[in-house]
Image (cartoon, rainbow, N blue to C red; front, side, top):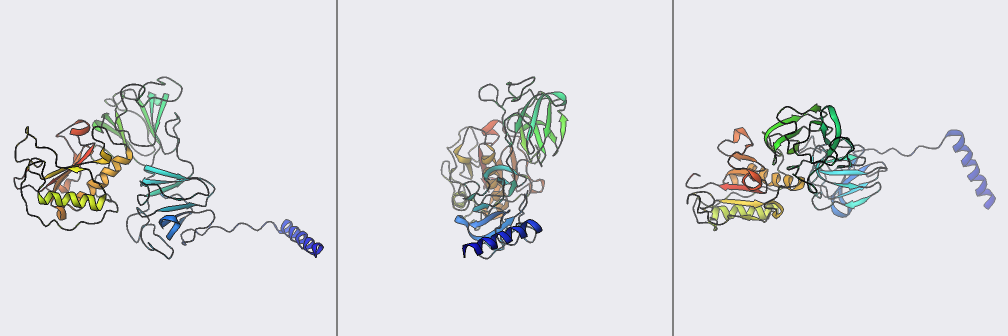
Length: 402
């Protein structure tokens, strides 16, 4: 019997050698089956629920049917858009895959190694808009990688390089805390702030360089792929940059998706006035909806402001300041900035239901009265707190009209 099996095995080997090895089964992307060579997202944790399978990078999952990438297989979530709905991933490719918070391969991210079968991390679970095959750019190594934004010490892309994979709201003034030029060459080790002369935008989005910290002041926008010398007024006069936005559009201007937060009920309370730090019933209703529907729990009316009129929104209990990740006094990182925009856009979208008057965040303002203009540059304050970079401000309809 042993000799017979050996002979069969030998014949099989000869056949394979003669005709060639049978090729591996090719993955059939977008059929709801997680096959070898694919990257798969699951609606539920622990790889449960409906599956969405991919054979390529996707820069934007899309917001709505029939154009979004949806969960394909039977199970919880079948037919829903993948965007902001994936809880687990299985990487059956031979390379790492990075899942991103924002479209365009931007914002917070999580990288899953080849073969990895994981639940997505907090901050990425149900907060995902894109994925990219291959190792993520090695930011801050002094090499201008694909998908990075890079600044050069000298014009014509000479001298030391400082490379970034995220927006930076303040380059910093001194070592060891500033963002410095990293690679060999003129300027190595110096702070980037007020020292950059050229830029190369290797991301898939426009990038705006600003004269001031906090994405403020004069600016220059470099389109995706742009390789330029910085303009007079920005050359060697630069303090921040933002990926995917301009001074006029903000990090979340226009009608961008406010995320998966559900719609609130209509505010049942009439216009009224209280006295800070007490909220009116109408404002307390908004505070409750923010906490219950978005998870943001650090919203306050604040103390009475003796230096303001008694009829202002804050003093009458008709305004809230919502600190993002409880980070008052410091500029947000990329994840906190995106988190703040989700709340701000949600308040914008449901302004009618909540009786919102205006919203301020990240140096931008949106108001009901000028809603046709979208998000505008906020000019009534500056700095991290005055410019509303560390908190989202929301004003409720006030009987005094402030």
